[in-house]
Length: 288
Image (cartoon, rainbow, N blue to C red; front, side, top):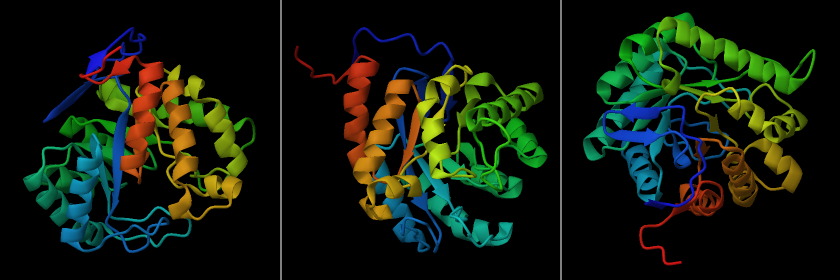
């Protein structure tokens, strides 16, 4: 892809995976969601291995640079599953998808044993909704893989400003990872839209994305089909494509590096247009 007058946002190094390299800041990456669960909030869970692999391949075909596989629902009121059940759901999908594709695989888990087994099966990185527990931190450092650290909280209660607390907690997690030997370019910060936050909190975080970027680490935003979009638009989860698109465009404008989405085909177009304006991206066959 051709680039013109690119803004200097790639001073944070590179994302380096087995089959994929990316200069942070050059483009906005799309992470496509694949839920290997029966209870996804958006109704897209796929417990059948072949169906989940087919959906992962479709997400890649539609334009996802990374596919995020999760086998435990994180919806409000979700039923936890143990590591054995999570691996029973997840590992066959990782193995079959890896056999069919070189696309980077992210694993959405909070369990070190699940992460270890998934990486051995072909996965490339961790996406943890509770940041790094000591066990996960040890695993990430040993495996030398990138990690998405997300802010989360049991209850949506904050003594002070929600953004101040979110950024402080993320920075604390990032510094712990750095101290353990994880490289800065492998630490991706996610403010956790929809996790431990009210709809108003989510909007405050979205208004303050430049402050997240200013921490100096790569970043990810996951707003896709979230309930606060429904509260604003009155739409059901599967009808929130346009609301999600607005948040994705705002994310690109702010400088977010990765957007995690369900509707990859639609968000590819959003990112292309936003990247063309914000990051100077142009297609190879572009004619002025």
